[in-house]
Length: 461
Image (cartoon, rainbow, N blue to C red; front, side, top):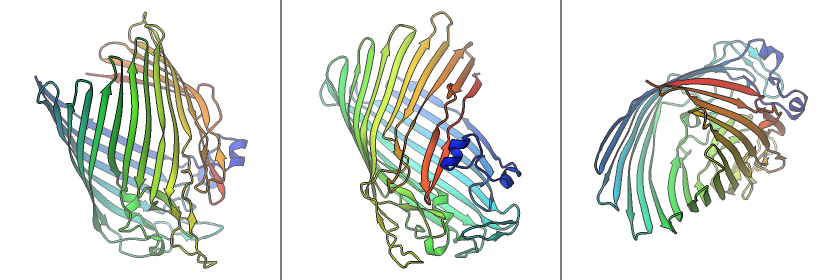
């Protein structure tokens, strides 16, 4: 496991772990197991189609939190069972309806404790005794999401689509620890509780066929993102846990207009979008340096996306995907209502109009594809990926330059059952920062990976 580097550490040696010698001596690692089993049943008959996908999923994640001064051990696991089902039927040649439902039940366990006695230094120094438990709980999540979509024609050239989705998401939190406001290290333990998030999300679109090659469209979609269980229940001291019972789901409204065209050798997609997010969930920090999640009023994302593919020959094609966006706080008062316990002055900062942290101004991807005409099943892609500049903090006090790297990918279908795939990431072995931010007036840089080669096999039976 790595820690974020400060700027001088990154410039000196970006390959270093960024961890103290005493931490490296314990050889900290993250161990994860992931298994997913699914099956699909399909029925199709004339104007009727149905699909049912049941699935089971298991994930475990055990690690030492090396970024915390006391280095606690964290162990978690999640077991999930779910079902994705839909049916589609045509009323006539011009109208069709899809009705479906997504179901999931997940049971997760989370346990964090102090593996060894450790005394920290500096500000907020403390001695953490071996065996101290920070949290020990279980959370059950149940999600039920039925939806319906209808497609139809208004004229021969004008099509429409309307849809509606209902989300009912419920958390059942069970805490094995006693209830307390502070365990002596700034952690709070809350009583077992249930929380439900409900939302009805509409969507609609219009598509107009200009000619046989091109069309224009407009689209509206409403959606939500609910808080995670750790954001809801793994809280800090009572004084700084204002998010309990007040952390709401994010609600977004997306408006988009676009143009699509497919010519003999060139395909083009161009879109302009505006996404307004209400009650956006962002990270805040308390007086003890601990992070917490709060709703940040309103956030707006807007920009354009462009994609094109040019077929040079049956074997060669060139593809470009480019997105230029502006991500900003439409209205956000950081530390609203908070008072500095030392100076007794307000800590409020108006960040309305500022750009979001680590939100690049552009993302670009250029790919040169080769489909061999002599070796059947061989595909090779050379890729250039570029990320634009972004702000390192919410105050927009310092900007970080993005990066550009090159990758190489290859796939070879040996036969109907066996496929070999390989990839070389950062083929030029370039030194770059994957992420960079400022926290507590200190740079935190996550180095990008050096040149890495991957190879894998896919076997179908």
